[in-house]
Image 1 (tube, one colour):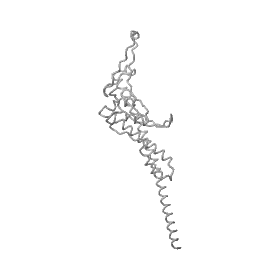
Image 2: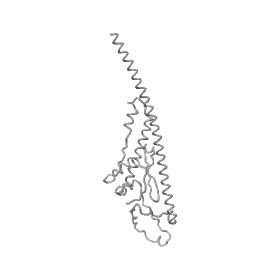
Image 3: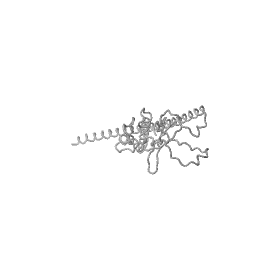
Image 4: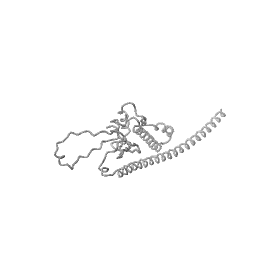
Length: 248
């Protein structure tokens, strides 16, 4: 297949899965002129796609698996003096959110690129699960049922993103005006879903930002208290040293 008319691609969310082992999957939403569907891919699936695409590399980089964990734990852990279980949860979510945005940027760059090299590759079309719609077998002609089986002829591949969408059982009886209205409503519905998903993502990021800000304030206060205690202890030790010198 080539020239798949993907109008839009997004990674609106991620989910935690428990089976067969605990892991994270990313929801990849694909929009074409006549349909929208979602596939779920792990980060390793993105890595495999990146490796299977022949050079040159895609226009946007693949985000790394770990970005903030090491630095964030060094900041919030205070060398092991403070418990960081809750902080680690926020950090993990923030890291996944950053990676989700990077994966979405990676896929959108492939779809929006002037060059079809990446989006027309077998690896990419397998990744997004693009399938050719099958033509229904005619059943109204009795002679058709009496003919011997004929060899299957491959469907003509997609050629251009602007090529009209193929008819379906739903669109076939429609007039031009009804078809235009149907396609417009379908696209608007898909855009509404993506807008809702984006709003949910922004709300999650906002909540994470508030939690992280709160935790940073708490740790800042703890550091100030620790600093004051150290100064107080140092002052007492200096006074004790002075007394020892006087006794000598």
